[in-house]
Structure formats: C-alpha cells, structure tokens
Figure 1 (cartoon, rainbow, N blue to C red):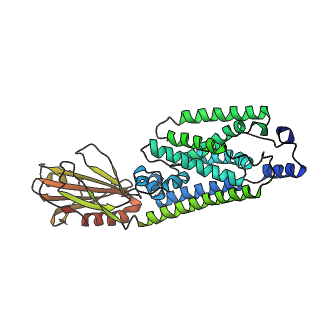
Figure 2: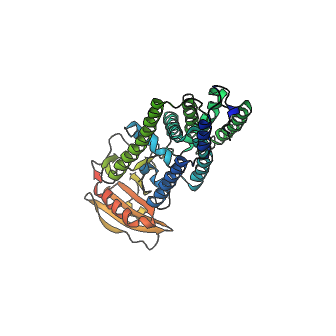
Length: 391
C-alpha cells in the first residue's frame, strides 16, 4: 500500500503550497519510530515471558496479563490492554512482528505518529473487548490491533475519496480487502481468536471515520486540533503504562495472597480442603477424576481422592520400583511422601489416609529447573490441608 503525496492526488481544496508539499515529503520519509518502539516492547515482553516461564510462555501468560474473562469480571480491566503486547510462541510473535513492521511502516507515515499510536491501541482494546464478550478462552496477541490497521486502511479511502486518486484508491482497497478475507479465513483455525480479529477490524475502521491521514490532510494546521490529538495520544500512553503497572502490582502479590480452594467432587458437603496461591487456576476434568491446578510459573498440582477404595498401601505399590516413600503426617493424619524424576520433570507426591476407607493424593509436577521452588510450594500447600469430617 503505497501513496504518493502529489498535488494531483488532491482534488479539493486547492493545490497545497510548497511548504505543505515539503511537509508531506518529510512525513513520507520520516522514520516510523512508534512502529519500532512497539516492536521493541513486544519483543522485550516476550523475552521476559521466556525467562520467567523457563522457556514456556504459556505458563506465565496469566502472570503477564493475558485476556482472562473471569479476572476481567473481577475488576482486572487492564488485561484488555496488556494482552495486546503478549504472544504465545515464536511463530505467533514472528507473524505479528513482521505484520506490524510491514503495516506500521506505511500506516504510521500515512497517519502520523500520534494518530497511528491511538489507532493501534484503540483497535487492540476493541479486539480484546469483543473477545471478552464472545470468546471464553484466554487469549493474547497484537493481532486485533493489526486488524485495526487494516480496517483503517480500508475505510480511509472510502471516507476521504478526494484525498487520493481513483487509481490509488482502487489499488489500496483491492489489496487490503484480499488481505482481510485471507486472514479472517485463517482465523477460523483452532487456537486462533477470531473475535479479537473481528473486533480490531471494526474498531480500526470506526476510528478511521474520524481520523484524517496526516500525510494527505490538505487543511491548514489548527492549534486546538493538534493539542487535542496530543492529549489523546498521551492518554493512550498513560493507559498502557497504568495497565502495565496494575498488572505488575497484582502479579507481585500472587505468591503472597492465598485463597481457600475447596475440592468436593462427590458431595455438596466437602470433607477436606487446601489452599493455593491466588494466581493458580483450575483445569476442568470429568467429574470424579480429580482436579488440576496450574501456577503462573507452570507448576501443575493434580489432586484426587478415593473413597471406599483399596488400602493406600496398594496405591503406593504402584510407584516406580526403587522409590521408597517416607512416612509422615499431614494435618495429623498418616501420610506417605516421595520425590520422583522423569525426564526433565520433577514430581512431588503425597498420599494422605485420614480415614480407613478414604485417602487423598496430591502430585505436583514442575520442570527440573524449578525443583527447589516446586518442593517449597508443595510443602506450603500440604501445610494448608484440612480434614473437616469423615466422608
């Protein structure tokens, strides 16, 4: 999508002055600093996720502020912003990074730095907002914001037809409509948030109705309009910084705040309970098969109970040969402990038999590089186990 700011493209008002022409040429040749800054931020955040997640960014997406519907409903509205800057894999960030470089280079020169930044963030928020309304699964990525740039690229030649020649308008619309159709078709693949893409496309197109591209704007400079634009752009910057700060504040407290997680697969009157840090989230499993809780760092706690089953010693006999469980107590009840290593995964296992015909099994799995932290977390969880009554 290339637009030459020549006088032939402007049909009305009259031909711009030499100063206006020089300004347009300068805009066309200007370095797209906002695009480059966004790329730096997105890459830096992804590297931070790799470091904190020990190579697995999925483990820390919640910690860094992905779009989590339940948490947004609880008041963490800033996830609609922070999710724009997160990515889930090298392929994800590679595709979005290249798209931002290609689209950003052209759209920033066309709209100007302030308008471009406002357009990018506004589109990303619109994408995440529609995803929040229509897509229950967590999501992350700059795709919604990028679709907003495409939406703006489609709308502005329709909204301001006198600013560019009919030939340029036809070329722009043909290219971007095909790009939109192709990318929306790809968005139907599993694991891709179609609603975020649609929301970003709508948001960017809507904002383009009111934002005239700076490169093609034939109007004389209006001081109040420029000031208003600067205030809006600064507001978007402050919104991003505030969102990042709020997520940082919440993430830093996750390991210190605890909430009681009650597990009762077989009755409405739970007979035992335990605590995990607030940042841990459950993964739904078929009723009666157990529960899995995942920490922001990727630790997985699998919990199951057996009522009316064979003695716990029969279960212990299933452990790998050579592993000798240690006896102890949890909440004053007999318990058996073991630590296992399988490949690059470390396991902490505990079986508690509070009653003759019932026992509880807790297994914490984590990467071997996190073994020390996993052991510490496992002990803290065991200290919170309580038995309320016989099942």
